[in-house]
Amino acid sequence: MPVCRFDLDLLRRGQPPVADSDLLLDMTVGTELWLERVREHYLENFIRHGGSKVKLVVGGAGTGKSHLLRWIAATAARMDYATVFLSLREPDAETGDLLRFSNIVEFYKAVAKRLDLNSLWSGVCTRVVRELGYKPEDYDFDRPIISMLVERERLPIAEAKRRLSEATASAWSHCGLSLAFVTFCFRLVACRGESIEQARADLCFRWLSGEKLDLADARRVMLFERLSKPNARVWLYSLVRMLTLAGWSGVVVLIDDLDFLPDGLNLQTGRPFYTPNQCKDIWESMRQLIDEGEKLPHLFVVLGGRSPFIEDEKKGVKSYEALWMRLQSGLAPGTDFNPWRDIVDADLLLRALGGNSFCEQVGTSLSNVLEQRGHARLYKEFTPDAEDSLLRQRVREAATMADGEVA
Image (cartoon, rainbow, N blue to C red; front, side):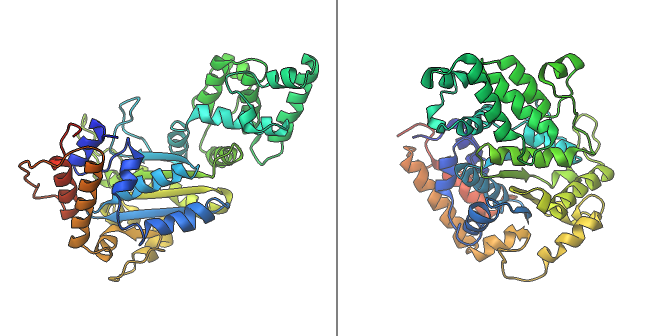
């Protein structure tokens, strides 16, 4: 299968592909030193079994940080995690706005708005279907749940309604969710219980995403609680808990380009996009995620960016002592790469993998993968950017030499 134009253009700019996870995984080499340990220790075991973790990936420009985060995202998605990838530097695909991430409320909204809501709807209903004694494959999601009881068990409609109500209560009433989220699950099931009500389900999803419903809409779905700073952590816990109960292994959130916090400018005003106080609010949110890990099971957060987001004395992690005290051991001086530190040094990782020889290996691997996809390797003039790292140069060169047309 040929590489789509979007991913090929990304590779020619030295960036990892985002549309084709197979391409990303196939071109990746050197996973044994860190990435496979993340998969085996965290994704297969610790997070899946109720653990919580926050990790940071930091390094110089062109050291593969974004690729590392993309690999974790692609791998987690294949292991049935609800996966959300965020970039502080890239505009939102729907609104065109940069992500505003200045407190735990905005963190929650950013995660909730990027979930696969139809899959969530299906998962919430499937849990009820199991309570009714059916297998998930027995349920046709294009039809109301009650149709199974009426058609397969020959139940009268009134009895089928009673069975459905009991199964919904058994599935979602006493499972550790906040009362508002229990109501949300009940309403989602009701939207597909006796009929399919897309408009009402859309109101439920707007509420889940943190939007403020007007009173009339809130009454339609019986969801009156609003997301706020005091309840944001309860909402986040309930969201992750609901997703795991609905069939996911957990939630993995990747946030790239954290160096935009100290360096980013608002192009319209010319002023910094984040103030020092807003940065402190972000670091406080991260501290809460670390300190309250036991209250946020099945959540894995990985932050990535260039070193200014750590080192900057006014806006970086070091500017917020409460967070820095919990992480500074991860930057203990040394020349050996330690895969178990909470702050992963991408420069040391690259060096441990072989340095320049590893960069050549990456270029060769990408060339081979592109040829296997049908893109013939053709000589073209290529002038590397003087500011590019060797790793980025090899990726750009291999992608540039790949014919844009299928061989």
